[in-house]
Length: 365
Length: 157
Image (cartoon, rainbow over all chains, first blue to last red; front, side, top):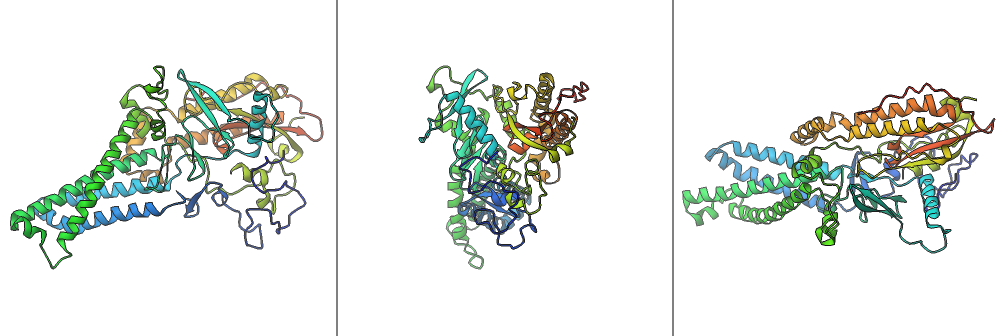
C-alpha cells in the first residue's frame, strides 16, 4: 500500500535505492554513514514539542513561563527558608521549616512531573489507517473525493444514554476519542484534554491531570503557609521592638523590610489566584469534567433538560478517587523507541532502510 | 499450506490491512468492537476472532479497573510525590505485558497459520487492532487449517 498523501515528502520505498543522498527525506542526518545511528522516535515527532534527556522529558515549545514559575517558587521558598525560618524555628518550633520543606519538596516534585510527562498525546494515524478511514467516510457520504474539502466529519456515539459527537481531526487523521481535543499550541490531539497551561509549560491531559491538581493544591498550602508565617514573623518581631522598628530591623542582614514586603505581595496575589484555581479544579474533579467541557458548557443544564455528564460516576467521592487514584495509562507515543523498518513490507535485508522505513516510521507519526 | 510466523514474513506479501475500531459506547475505557470484518470472512472462523477481541477487551478492562488495589497504588504514589513510579511498574503496564504475550501467542497459534497477523493496539495508539492479511506468493491463498485447538486464555479480569 502506498503511504497516504499529504503526510510528508516521503517517497514510495524503492528497494534498490540504498543511496544515502536522497534530499527528500526529512530525516536525513548530516552523518555520512546512515546505518550507524538509528534514530529514536522523539526525533521525528510531528507535534510542536521539545524533548530533553534523549526523549525522557517532553514539554511544549514555549517554556519561558515555566522557568518563571520555577524562579518564583524557588526564590520565594528560598527567602522564606533563609530569613524567616531561623527566627521562627527558635521562637516557635523547628517543625515549621520541616513542614515547609516537605511541602516544598512535594510542590517541586509534582510540578516537574506535570511539566515533563506526556499529557496523553495520541499518535497520528498511520497512512494505512488514514486511508482506511477515508474509504469508510467516502462510503458513508456516498460521494467521491472532490477538490473541495468535504463537510466536517463527525461520528455519533451513545455513551451512557447521552449522544456524544466524535470529531475527525484533519491534522492527526483520526476520529478523536470522546473527551480528547487537539491542542493548537502543541499541534497534538490529547486524551481527556483539560487545557494548555503555560505556567507548567505543557498541556494538561489524562496522564498528568492528577500531578497538575496535586501541584496546585500543594502550592496553595505552601503559599498560605509561607504567607502566614511571614506575617507571624513580622508580628513577633514587632511585639519585641515595636511595629515600625520591626519593619526597619536588622540592617546588618539583607534588608528585612524589602524582602518581607515583596514576598508578602507576591504571596498575597499567588494565594488568591492559586487557591481559587485549586477550588475550581476541585469542583471539576468532583463532577468529572474537564476545563474544556466546563468552558464550553458541554454538560450544563442550560443546553437542555436532558443534558447530563455521561462520564460522571454519580457521586463526588468516586469521581475524585477515579481522577486522582485511578490507574495511570502508559504513554502512547513511545518517545525513546527506535524507528524500525517495516519488516513485513520489505522482502529484502534491512540495512540502510532505517531512514527509508517509510510506512513504519510514518506509523509512529 | 500452513505458515509459521517467520515464514510469513519472508515468503508472503502483504495484501491488505483490516482495522478493528474502538467501541466507545461504554465511555472512554479501552474496548474494541467485536463486529466481524467482512474481509476476514474467508480467512478465519468468526468465533475465534470474536474470542480474541473479547479476551483483549477483558484485559483492558482489568488494566483500567478502578478498585481497591488501584486506589492503594494511587495513594502510595501520591504520598511519595510520584517518585515511586521511577522504580515501580504500574498495574497497567503489567497488564499490557500480559496482553503483548497473549497477542504473540494468538499470532503463532491461530493467525499466522491462516496468513494473518495481529498488531498490538499499543503500537497504534490504542485506536485500532490492525490485522494484516497476507497473500502467499507461491499459492493464491492459504488453506484454512481447521485446527480447533484454540488454547487462548479464558476471559481476563
